[in-house]
Structures are given as structure tokens and as C-alpha cells.
Length: 64
Length: 211
Figure 1 (cartoon, rainbow over the protein chains, first blue to last red):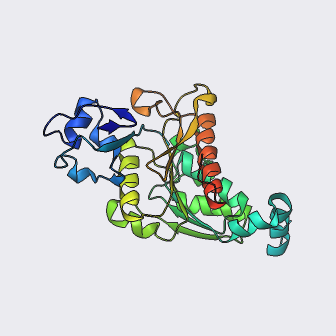
Figure 2 (spheres, helix red, strand yellow):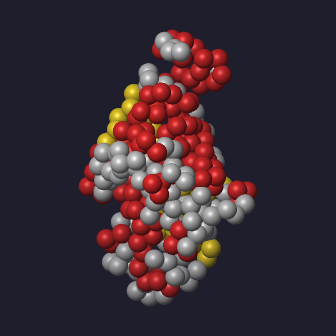
């Protein structure tokens, strides 16, 4: 699969939540798009990823 | 001195050009949060003469805001929406301002910004930024969103830029300098980020979709 334009390996059963944990992201501070659709935070743990998925992760930092 | 609506509008047309001003006259921009980013963005957009501004913040002005937010000592204790309105009315009293003194949550975000041409995310906390962007991208499928992420400290302003993500999300800032790392927010970089957000909002209103 592709994550932010880079080709990555998708392990079986991987969810958005486990992907974020693997990459060191706090799931409360990111927005995630899968194949052009925003993934609601409530579904991060249920959304199982596939080898042909295109994932975009935007991480936010605090301050404003 | 007090200018009539025609005198003030003529002055904007003289600076911006008639075609551009006509587009701005008919535009609506939402600003989510009126802190360091949002207060500065609102001032920029009012000076541009953007026809209608939807201004949302639940908070009041505090002493700790004055190092970077577009308020003054006399505003302390006043809701940010009202303190901001007073300034915007002084800049251009002929625009339509729609203040909402309420907390933005997933349940009301889409309703508050439903008829905006562009929404500027101007929150302080990273999790709140993520929440708003997720909600608006999901529920307002045609509205571009301009966000600010990474403007703390006094690192080079040259590290701050506007990136397009997710097709219609624009993220301004350096993407890394985080208040969670103990770096304080200071007026210049917050103002740079706000100006980048206002510039991107302006570009979108004028039909330019690239940063």
C-alpha cells in the first residue's frame, strides 16, 4: 500500500489504529484519508487495511 | 473621519481591482477559533472586504492572549467574538459579521460553517484541529479548509509554507514546532501563519486551488 506517497508493506489484519501506532502517531492528533475518503476517528480500530490502499496521514501540532 | 459604504468600497476597488473586489464582496469565509491565528485572519479578511465572515469562539480574552492575539487590555474578560467584532466594525462596518459564541464540536461544526466558501481552522490544540478537519471533510464535501499547524517559537519564518493535502485541505506553518514540546507561541510566527492562511483563503476565493 501507499502511505503519504511511499510504498509500504501492509501486514495482515492491520487497522488504521495499528498503522498509526506502528508509525508513532497519536490517533487523536491526525486526520486520515483512505482511498480519497476521510476515515472517522471512531472507526480507526475497525477499518482493516488492504495491500492496494492509498493512505494519507496528516499530523497536527499544537499552537494557534 | 467616517467613510460611507460607497467611499470605502471605492477605495477597495481602487486597490484590488473591480473584478477581484466583486468576487470578495460575494464571498463567505468561516473562522473556527479567534485566538492567535483566528483574530489575525479575521483582521486580514475584513481589510480585504470579504463580504461575510462567520466568527466562532466560545472563549473570553485573557491576559495570556495579549502576546500574540489581536486584542488589547480593554478586551480582557470580554468574549473574543465581541472583542473581535468591535475591531472589525472599525475596519469595515459594511461587511456582514456573524459571531457565534459557542464551542465547536462534531455535532455543530457542519451547521456553523455550512454556507462558507472556505473555512479557516484556527484552533490551539492539535486534537481539536484534527477533530474539526475530520468533521468538516466528512460533512462538507465541497468546502476547502485552510489549517495552521506549526508556528510556535522563533525559528526561521522561511520554514513556514502552505501544503495541499487530501485534495482540499491546506496546511500552513512549519508542521513541527509544537507547544506540547514546551515551545511558547510568539506574535511574529503566529502572525506569519495567520497571513499564510488568509492568503490561501483569498486565493481560493479567487479560484486558485494551488498553494
